[in-house]
Image (tube, rainbow over all chains, first blue to last red):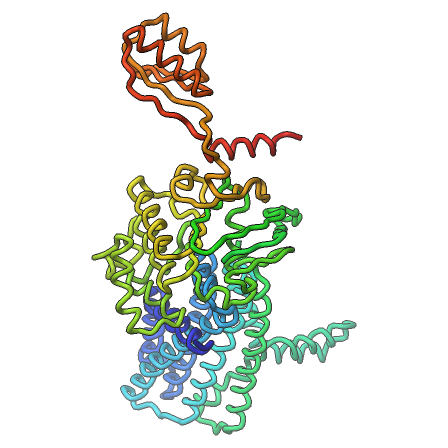
Length: 258
Length: 308
């Protein structure tokens, strides 16, 4: 029996657990309402610009995706530990890395379905309103998914050694900083304070640069987006996720289940 | 089947990371086909030892093997069935889904799972509840589902952590019967318990753990011996003078309505009392010779521990 099989079994169970959680449906409902609300917002805006549909749609997919990645991600891993269901799983010939990768894969499939559902809703709004569709919107959604994979890896990294509350807080903090890292670097380069420039430069290179994955503005405005930019950003997200998951495995491997 | 040598586990706990020695030095030898009772009061180190054996904790020092493989090797758990204390479940699953998930995790083919799951659920007394979510199970039913989970791979070795804890008398009897039937099938059962009567009824071998150390280990007959350490006599229809006289010679005496119970420290004293009762016209209801019990062993151990 291979590791791949055990990962598949763990991932399927994680997916099943998540889809039986009412929280997910509530978040999806809010996301759908938010995407649909762009129709109302378009009525009250000054001028006629169908960009509002694309702005609101992409932002809703991104925001609710991150919410689901953090809350479902942090809780799913922690629940296995706090309810001690992990005992019966790890007392089998299951490697600890297989357990973590299985959970991660289950969450990734959940996020894929959730992004697909929100995207379908978004597409429905574009068709309904007759707003313009660009291929850039697809690339933007692809990168939103990559960002969610990275945020999930951050949540799993923290979940492997701390409480869900702290994991959630740390993940949200990193997500915010990740979107501001370029600004922090710029701020540091203008600072005269000794050491601050070096510190912010180091943070820029160490912390995840989520701005790289954010092409919503260009996609919404219909500006051309090079495939190399999308590919580079996606590769960055997955490599960063790999590093975080490796760290989570190292920490989880040494953990005693009391 | 199970072997440990100088097994130790020290925790760091609390804000000041105080060291707590949960397991001090444990040597265990559990042979194939036995029921082995791991007995001790709460906090003695039973669960910690079991967690080391099942790979949930790493020992601070010493070694442990299952099926001659070190416990650090996940393959040592391939033919193991394990029921953790308190039995924790994915309670959004139904009983059948729960077993199917654990069976799949062990790589059991789907066709075998499909055939084995209903039989197992029936065996543990959950027939008819397979499609109900575990969150709707009673405590006893959850324990039974946990037991079924521990048997899904038809293991050679079953480790059960406090399997009778929290069960009603019928549930306890069912678990005892199940453990005995597992031995009849040639399986080895290692179970921890602080319920001494259960252990005394079903175990071949026991180890008593106190304060992280094995106090006594061996076959039950060797440990408890065959000699009588006393007798319990129940009589009725005796007058107050005889009651007072028998009470003076007894270790303990209790009045139960019209009956009188006397516990004597040796058989000879009990026989003498028996003669007295008969000659005075009293009626003897029962005379039960008492062997040394696990409780006696445990109390002896606790007394030894308490001495400076």
